[in-house]
Amino acid sequence: MHDNHPGLSLRMLQEIASNIWTLDGDPIRFFGIPFPIRMTVVRLPDNRLWLHSPVAYSESRAEQVAALGRVSYIVAPNSFHHLYIGHWQRHFPDAQIWGTTALQKKRKDLTFDGILNEHSAAPWQPHIDQLLFAGNILIPEFMFLHAASRTLIMTDYIQNHDPHDDGWFWRQVKRVIGVLAPHGGVPLDLRLSTLRRKEARRSLEQLLAWDFERILIAHGDCIMQDGKEYARNAFRWLA
Image (cartoon, rainbow, N blue to C red; front, side, top):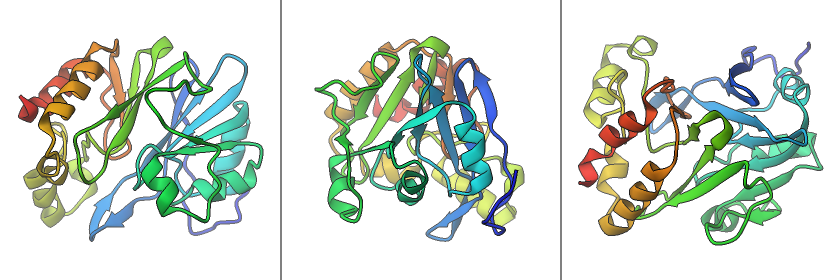
């Protein structure tokens, strides 16, 4: 396995359950705060691959993913997680790019094959279900359920940063904003920008009606058991 991006570390796919994997990327900084990042890969029954929130592209990462099946869908679940979708699509030109309405307006350099929508079927359904978590004026986000593995796939709404990854200062910052493991949750900025609380509560009710045991997240340690109880606690501020 070779790589033409020497600045990127060699990360390996991690199998989470049958037909679902994660791949960690190199940490990024957002407003100066260090963030670990992660993508999720799901293999559908006909060998199509669904890529959620891809990390920075490299040949080694692409080779690992391609070995699993045929990359068919590259999904940006909100208007922040989009930086690398174009790079992956250039390497897998037959893959469709799907994103939110807001992202389509933001990334006019990309051609979107589909817009995420709760009210019309996506080509990966019924194997992966989707839900728009509404009510936030800053970052509405689509969340997904891989029913076969009872896995909820999220991006920014639950974060659970490992305290050993940061120095003292950033640990305190992450503690204050509510995302430090093992008691991570919804970041303070997302809580404050959820102004339409009734919409958010309806979304939460739908989310908790799903059958899931684990939660895969983009930032921090995933929740591998008792995921529904973890989600219920993380969103208790909506009560």
